[in-house]
Length: 102
Image (cartoon, rainbow, N blue to C red; front, side, top):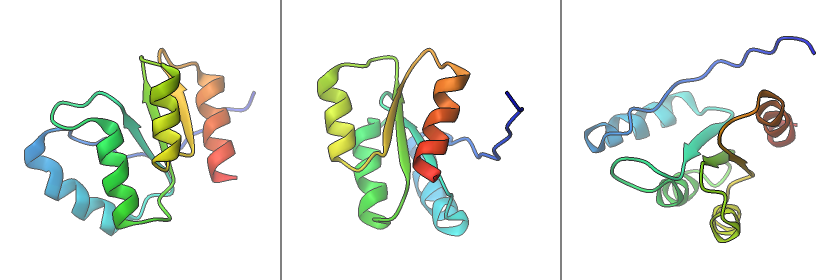
């Protein structure tokens, strides 16, 4: 398998950084947003809903160590294009990126 590299920007996760992160999203308009279900001040599903409300064309992939079916369904219904369960496996992450970015 050929080595793949994808540039990314890691979110800060702190509530004080929320406005900064929204501004950065609007500035960069990333091709892909990855969100964890568990975050310090807001769950990833709520963050996903906010991103999709601000930009309905945003491409988001959720990830979590908790792969309960109800959580996966809620993430997909809220606009996530895919769901990756941790611990990450490189092949699965690359498969998801290829799937959602076509």
